[in-house]
Length: 446
Image (cartoon, rainbow, N blue to C red; front, top):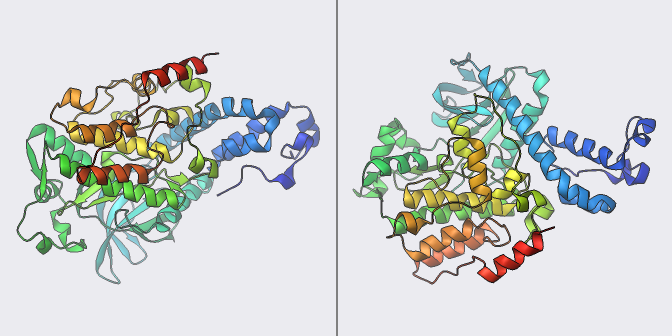
């Protein structure tokens, strides 16, 4: 974790020293802090808003009000830069060898890199390799640093339901890391298929996805199935909870290690032939700041209470895929705030979509999706599918509460309820009462 500001670098009013002291004195103190925070955000250092507020208590209110919007703006600018870079990536990658790894074929593109199936010629095992597809990109040091931090982040996690990273480094000017090649199908593919048919079989869907030749790399051999063709039906309520439970446990492990995933969605959950789920793509994951782990019922910024949101891009290149990812973002993330409960929210939205086979938030443009999320405008699962058990619906709604203070306080708490549901235990409804909602509404009015 990188500290937002070194106290030894303090100057006027205890603010960070500028290379030009006269310039520092000519600027407003808050402006100096804004510049420093923006620069740290651009460099991918994930500065802590609460750390700034504590360090510069005189401006704490302004910092908590303004900095989330700055963080959102810097994130938007960073995403726009990455979109421009992605357009420059050739359709055919120019090399086929990275050290001992021979690139067999491309598996997908997204986040910061391209993922290939690769053969480790020294061992004969097949792996997945994710690489940053820009060679000798000296003008892209920030992206290389971020990519390498991503690799180190995942490599530090050891959990049976998190994709494992074996190695990372550079070769011929390319940054890359090596991870498990998962012989499975993504949860979003299964949800899509359940919209078309009443039941799906994992093995069949893996074959449909063109991954049936990977069964030799799984740690759970096909023989372990003993002839049983495992899969899902539209009403597999118990199996749906069994999918969500290990994901919640994996997130809890990551959070305890100080890592947010930040992109939980069906496309980033893979299921193998036996139904084992693996969490993938920590590509925009980040370290949890101390204040992010301890926030409990912290008030949202006035932007949240008034429904103010950042203006989305009007660029016609904004894709349906980007809108799809937006659907799983917690309200506070749209306003530049996040903590471990933001991942809980995303898992709740994912489970909603799995049990209903319908997205929670549907709109044709980013602004409308953001409005729906901020105002928590969605139909409850049982309004869509009355047969859904109340306990399962309660878990989903608890995870999707718009105020983080009402939500499950951790992924572990959500996992406890999922395990309880599987044991037919009663599930507590965490939704605030009408009285509490009314009091909270008046307390937020100016």
